[in-house]
Amino acid sequence: VNAQTALQTTTVFGCVKKISEALTIPRKVYNRDSSGNRVEARAHPLFDIIGSKPNDVNTGIEFFEAIAIHLCLMFNAYVFINRVGGKDGKIVELIPIEPCRVDPVPRQNEYGIDYRVQLDNRESLMLDSSEVWHLRGPSWDGLLGMDAIKLAREAIGLSIATEETHARFHSNGGHPGGVFSTDNTLSKE
Image (cartoon, rainbow, N blue to C red; front, side, top):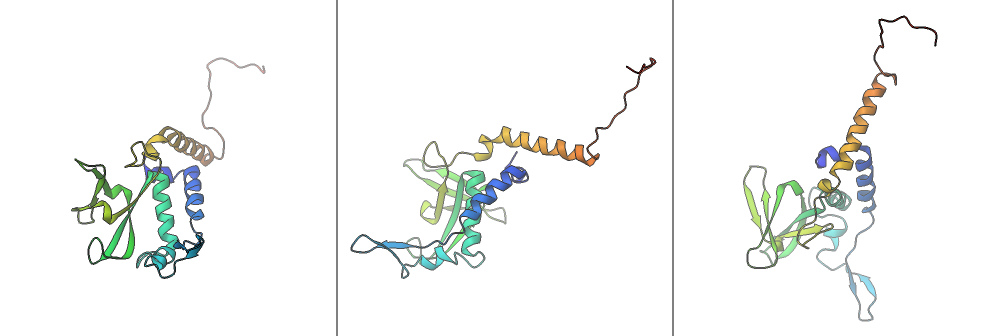
């Protein structure tokens, strides 16, 4: 059982779809004014990126749906923070990274994580934690979300087996196949 096979079960797909669609609500960046009231921060550099256009490929809705799907299935979502002018430069886009392409690498002498990302050309790229927005689901150590599919593997496997059994049963018109035979003469009873 993996994320792809889990998504092929109606229950998992339905739950993930419902959760990811719930994140289509408007997303805005806010500041607090001098009175402590929350006000839209339209001048904030992330206002448009978070709200409507995180990158050149995704709309805001598509971006956050992908993040939600990653969180639901993997309890980890990773986003590359693309900046102009180095690690402290202006954020120009946010790009979701498939969790299966990311290998979190705990730092040796300090509390933290860096990320090895598998690229399309089979090479990998090491990214500092300042370059990755890592959203975590439930976690034991606060660094990495637990493996959601592994935790629910038995239940998802049972669902897959049940769906396959029912599909085969109904492909026969809902009638079990087979013939009973005997060498004895059968009476009415």
